[in-house]
Amino acid sequence: MSLTFQRRTPRWKPVVSVCVAGLVILSAALPGFCMDVLVAHQLNALNGSTVKLSCTFTSCYKVDNSKFAMNWTYQETVNDTATMFMTYKNRMTLLRTDKFEDRVEFVGNLERNDVSVSISDVQLSDEGIYNCYVRNPPDRVQGHGIINLVVITEMPPPRDSTIAVAVGATVGGALAVLILSMVVLKCIRRQRKQELISDEQKMEEDKMEGDGGAE
Image (spheres, rainbow, N blue to C red):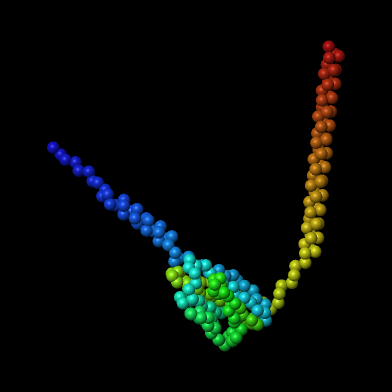
Protein backbone atom coordinates (compact mmCIF):
# COMPACT_ATOMS: atom_id res chain seq x y z
CA MET A 1 0.00 0.00 0.00
CA SER A 2 1.51 3.27 -1.10
CA LEU A 3 0.74 6.57 0.50
CA THR A 4 0.57 9.77 -1.54
CA PHE A 5 1.29 13.00 0.22
CA GLN A 6 0.03 16.28 -1.23
CA ARG A 7 2.11 19.36 -0.63
CA ARG A 8 -0.03 22.13 0.75
CA THR A 9 0.77 25.80 0.50
CA PRO A 10 0.98 27.29 3.98
CA ARG A 11 -2.06 29.39 4.74
CA TRP A 12 0.06 32.28 5.97
CA LYS A 13 1.77 32.92 2.60
CA PRO A 14 -1.22 34.55 0.86
CA VAL A 15 -1.74 36.71 3.95
CA VAL A 16 1.90 37.84 3.89
CA SER A 17 1.68 38.64 0.17
CA VAL A 18 -1.40 40.77 0.74
CA CYS A 19 0.28 42.57 3.62
CA VAL A 20 3.42 43.31 1.59
CA ALA A 21 1.35 44.65 -1.30
CA GLY A 22 -0.61 46.80 1.12
CA LEU A 23 2.55 48.23 2.64
CA VAL A 24 3.91 49.11 -0.79
CA ILE A 25 0.71 50.91 -1.75
CA LEU A 26 0.54 52.64 1.62
CA SER A 27 4.14 53.83 1.45
CA ALA A 28 3.50 55.29 -2.00
CA ALA A 29 0.41 57.09 -0.77
CA LEU A 30 2.00 58.46 2.40
CA PRO A 31 3.00 62.14 2.36
CA GLY A 32 6.62 63.13 2.49
CA PHE A 33 7.34 62.63 -1.19
CA CYS A 34 5.28 65.45 -2.71
CA MET A 35 7.78 68.32 -2.83
CA ASP A 36 7.90 70.01 -6.23
CA VAL A 37 9.63 73.22 -7.30
CA LEU A 38 8.25 75.30 -10.17
CA VAL A 39 10.56 77.60 -12.17
CA ALA A 40 11.05 78.90 -15.69
CA HIS A 41 13.87 76.75 -16.99
CA GLN A 42 15.11 79.50 -19.33
CA LEU A 43 14.73 83.22 -18.79
CA ASN A 44 15.86 86.18 -20.92
CA ALA A 45 16.79 89.48 -19.28
CA LEU A 46 17.71 92.79 -20.88
CA ASN A 47 21.09 94.19 -19.90
CA GLY A 48 20.61 96.94 -17.30
CA SER A 49 17.05 95.93 -16.40
CA THR A 50 15.59 94.21 -13.32
CA VAL A 51 14.72 90.54 -13.63
CA LYS A 52 12.65 88.36 -11.32
CA LEU A 53 13.80 84.79 -10.77
CA SER A 54 10.47 83.20 -9.94
CA CYS A 55 10.58 80.07 -7.75
CA THR A 56 7.51 78.56 -6.11
CA PHE A 57 6.98 75.15 -4.56
CA THR A 58 4.29 72.70 -3.55
CA SER A 59 4.44 70.66 -0.36
CA CYS A 60 2.29 68.27 1.64
CA TYR A 61 2.81 70.43 4.69
CA LYS A 62 2.37 74.03 5.69
CA VAL A 63 5.61 75.97 6.01
CA ASP A 64 7.06 75.84 9.53
CA ASN A 65 9.54 78.71 9.79
CA SER A 66 11.55 76.85 12.42
CA LYS A 67 12.13 73.88 10.09
CA PHE A 68 11.95 75.39 6.62
CA ALA A 69 15.21 75.87 4.68
CA MET A 70 15.98 77.50 1.35
CA ASN A 71 19.11 78.32 -0.66
CA TRP A 72 19.78 80.28 -3.84
CA THR A 73 23.05 79.57 -5.65
CA TYR A 74 24.71 80.76 -8.86
CA GLN A 75 27.17 79.07 -11.18
CA GLU A 76 28.47 80.31 -14.49
CA THR A 77 28.39 76.86 -16.10
CA VAL A 78 27.43 73.36 -15.01
CA ASN A 79 31.08 72.50 -14.30
CA ASP A 80 31.73 75.58 -12.13
CA THR A 81 31.44 75.70 -8.36
CA ALA A 82 28.13 77.10 -7.13
CA THR A 83 28.14 80.29 -5.05
CA MET A 84 25.38 80.78 -2.48
CA PHE A 85 23.96 84.31 -2.38
CA MET A 86 20.74 83.88 -0.35
CA THR A 87 19.64 81.45 2.34
CA TYR A 88 16.84 80.93 4.82
CA LYS A 89 17.17 79.24 8.19
CA ASN A 90 14.85 80.77 10.79
CA ARG A 91 15.23 84.04 8.86
CA MET A 92 16.05 85.28 5.38
CA THR A 93 19.72 86.10 4.95
CA LEU A 94 21.27 87.83 1.95
CA LEU A 95 24.89 86.80 1.48
CA ARG A 96 26.66 89.75 -0.05
CA THR A 97 29.06 88.73 -2.77
CA ASP A 98 31.45 90.64 -4.99
CA LYS A 99 29.39 89.51 -7.95
CA PHE A 100 25.95 90.75 -6.95
CA GLU A 101 26.80 93.22 -4.13
CA ASP A 102 23.44 94.72 -3.14
CA ARG A 103 21.59 94.03 -6.42
CA VAL A 104 19.72 90.95 -5.13
CA GLU A 105 16.43 91.21 -3.22
CA PHE A 106 13.98 88.65 -1.85
CA VAL A 107 10.56 89.29 -3.42
CA GLY A 108 8.75 86.08 -2.45
CA ASN A 109 6.25 85.19 0.25
CA LEU A 110 6.71 82.05 2.36
CA GLU A 111 3.02 81.97 3.26
CA ARG A 112 2.31 81.50 -0.45
CA ASN A 113 5.17 79.04 -0.99
CA ASP A 114 7.04 81.66 -2.99
CA VAL A 115 10.81 82.10 -2.60
CA SER A 116 11.44 84.30 -5.65
CA VAL A 117 14.30 86.80 -5.84
CA SER A 118 15.06 89.71 -8.15
CA ILE A 119 18.31 91.05 -9.59
CA SER A 120 18.52 94.75 -10.44
CA ASP A 121 20.81 96.38 -13.00
CA VAL A 122 21.40 93.05 -14.75
CA GLN A 123 24.94 92.67 -16.13
CA LEU A 124 26.25 90.44 -18.90
CA SER A 125 28.27 88.64 -16.23
CA ASP A 126 25.01 87.64 -14.48
CA GLU A 127 24.30 85.16 -17.24
CA GLY A 128 24.45 81.60 -16.01
CA ILE A 129 22.68 78.94 -13.96
CA TYR A 130 20.61 79.78 -10.86
CA ASN A 131 19.58 77.01 -8.47
CA CYS A 132 16.65 77.24 -6.07
CA TYR A 133 16.77 74.61 -3.27
CA VAL A 134 13.79 74.15 -0.95
CA ARG A 135 13.32 71.86 2.05
CA ASN A 136 10.10 71.82 4.05
CA PRO A 137 10.11 69.08 6.74
CA PRO A 138 8.52 66.65 7.32
CA ASP A 139 8.71 66.40 3.50
CA ARG A 140 11.68 64.10 2.99
CA VAL A 141 12.60 65.26 -0.49
CA GLN A 142 14.51 68.45 -1.17
CA GLY A 143 13.06 70.47 -4.04
CA HIS A 144 15.41 71.79 -6.70
CA GLY A 145 14.66 74.26 -9.48
CA ILE A 146 17.13 75.29 -12.19
CA ILE A 147 16.92 78.57 -14.11
CA ASN A 148 19.16 79.29 -17.08
CA LEU A 149 19.44 83.10 -17.31
CA VAL A 150 20.37 84.59 -20.68
CA VAL A 151 21.30 88.30 -20.78
CA ILE A 152 20.57 90.13 -24.05
CA THR A 153 21.80 93.56 -25.10
CA GLU A 154 18.71 94.63 -27.03
CA MET A 155 15.14 93.59 -27.41
CA PRO A 156 14.19 91.81 -30.65
CA PRO A 157 12.37 94.12 -33.13
CA PRO A 158 8.58 93.90 -33.11
CA ARG A 159 7.09 91.80 -35.85
CA ASP A 160 5.35 93.76 -38.62
CA SER A 161 1.84 92.36 -38.78
CA THR A 162 1.05 94.39 -41.94
CA ILE A 163 3.30 92.16 -44.05
CA ALA A 164 1.77 89.05 -42.55
CA VAL A 165 -1.74 90.32 -43.31
CA ALA A 166 -0.76 91.21 -46.89
CA VAL A 167 0.83 87.82 -47.47
CA GLY A 168 -2.20 86.09 -45.97
CA ALA A 169 -4.58 88.07 -48.16
CA THR A 170 -2.54 87.30 -51.29
CA VAL A 171 -2.39 83.60 -50.51
CA GLY A 172 -6.08 83.52 -49.66
CA GLY A 173 -7.00 85.30 -52.89
CA ALA A 174 -4.87 82.93 -54.95
CA LEU A 175 -6.52 79.93 -53.29
CA ALA A 176 -9.96 81.38 -53.96
CA VAL A 177 -9.16 81.89 -57.65
CA LEU A 178 -7.73 78.38 -57.89
CA ILE A 179 -10.80 76.82 -56.29
CA LEU A 180 -13.13 78.84 -58.51
CA SER A 181 -11.16 77.80 -61.62
CA MET A 182 -11.39 74.15 -60.61
CA VAL A 183 -15.15 74.45 -60.11
CA VAL A 184 -15.64 76.12 -63.51
CA LEU A 185 -13.44 73.54 -65.23
CA LYS A 186 -15.38 70.73 -63.61
CA CYS A 187 -18.66 72.25 -64.75
CA ILE A 188 -17.37 72.59 -68.33
CA ARG A 189 -16.22 68.98 -68.36
CA ARG A 190 -19.55 67.80 -67.02
CA GLN A 191 -21.42 69.84 -69.62
CA ARG A 192 -19.28 68.42 -72.44
CA LYS A 193 -19.81 64.91 -71.14
CA GLN A 194 -23.56 65.44 -71.10
CA GLU A 195 -23.41 66.83 -74.65
CA LEU A 196 -21.48 63.75 -75.84
CA ILE A 197 -23.99 61.46 -74.19
CA SER A 198 -26.84 63.37 -75.84
CA ASP A 199 -25.16 63.15 -79.26
CA GLU A 200 -24.58 59.42 -78.85
CA GLN A 201 -28.22 58.91 -77.84
CA LYS A 202 -29.40 60.93 -80.86
CA MET A 203 -27.19 58.93 -83.21
CA GLU A 204 -28.51 55.69 -81.71
CA GLU A 205 -32.11 56.84 -82.19
CA ASP A 206 -31.43 57.87 -85.81
CA LYS A 207 -29.84 54.49 -86.45
CA MET A 208 -32.82 52.68 -84.98
CA GLU A 209 -35.22 54.74 -87.09
CA GLY A 210 -33.12 54.01 -90.21
CA ASP A 211 -33.19 50.29 -89.50
CA GLY A 212 -36.94 50.39 -89.04
CA GLY A 213 -37.51 52.19 -92.34
CA ALA A 214 -35.43 49.64 -94.22
CA GLU A 215 -37.65 46.84 -93.00
